Length: 174
Image: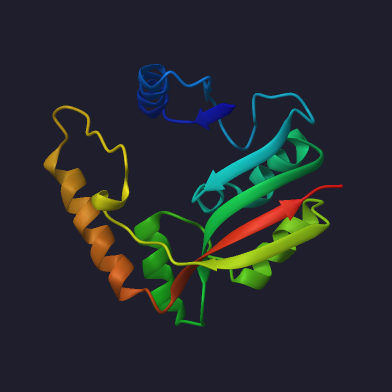
């Protein structure tokens, strides 16, 4: 099993966690847009709320590249549930720092274009909050601005729950 993160601090925290738990997991520093892995290396790629924050076509193509024939990508991603004004959409994209928010149909098209012939999606009721995280450990001396950011995120999440949703996409290769 291999984990990947582009943020070095998160890599270090993950490595510490897997060592503490005695898990046989390799944690790698890298970027989803240029995965540091060979072609057809993995049976499964799991991505949770990652793709939307990247160059989406490049990341999905990279996930496809590293999957073995018969492999599966499981991606949990934010979807636009209903049309909204350009002003509201711009506000949401700016808040989350994303260039676009796709509908379920647009996600399916993205996966198809990357070469996934079998795509299944399922609505996912995502619940936010520290109480839902089994192993939540804060870094020392966290700047108060990050707590304020988390509070703003919770407010945004509540105010957009009819507009934004989540899907689990299961994309298979042959």
